[in-house]
Length: 154
Length: 269
Image (cartoon, rainbow over the protein chains, first blue to last red):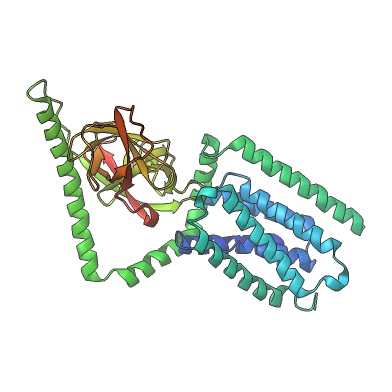
């Protein structure tokens, strides 16, 4: 298993590079938080390290892509806490791969929706990119489920 | 043991949420420290992003620009520069004519250098207000310099950092530009509505403006040179009351602000 900082840096850079390639036509999914969310559910890494990685990654994303400093960090940390809370209160029988995908994708959907609600004048502008972003996130969740959750929740 | 780890997780989560909120509240958007942080971070990360930028440029080049098109674009670029220079001179002449033999206005010091810049980010929340470009004070960019897309005004430099600059768009409600209606020579003030359009204020009621009349920049404001095309009249605003002596008009930006990928910064000397 690779160290978390290396995995996090790689995912952050991939998301950043895809955003450079796709901007300003499409908004790329927050694959960084999808990866952290899946890792949190997978439970092989330290939860607190994942939380710190979410905060740092969000902060760097704000610094690079022009959101108010702390906004994405807050969204990422908030979604990690929400995922953990929901996953913890679930019974073991309910912790299926499908639920894991719904949980992580749901957190992603909330992060994106909060962004749109917060910047309401861009709602109409980003309606198509928003859907594209969510479809991308869902596909990514399915791929990650196949990789990260193999043999853990099956 | 497991309970303690879970407890640590919640404590850290709450602390990080609180810290993020505190950061947002204290730093603020587009504040001096915020811009410094973003500029410094961009300087670091841009080398890592270079392959993506190159790949994007190559793909666009391969897909869109054949040799003939490239040649045509260069010709258009050169003509646009000539057009800008001519417009500036024309406006100067018209100003002199308007003075009708009184003290002539100082001649415009011809000498406009252009600097091409790529948009590196445009935040959805400030879509019609700000863009950030990859040129900064190290490239000679200064606050107030006009920013164009082709021959049309896009905005002006709001803040120039070392390697990046924030451009305030003409559709920003905070930017007010003195303008002239080309056909009538009426002078007014243009401001954005923050939603992709602009409002032209203080137009006399006795000379109604027609649809598609051109709006150009008026006399110099900071480095904002006169004679640059800004937009066209769309129609009179309904809310203007009969008691007012002046009308306000909706103005559509001539530049396609929805499809901006690169801009030209005018280095007016």
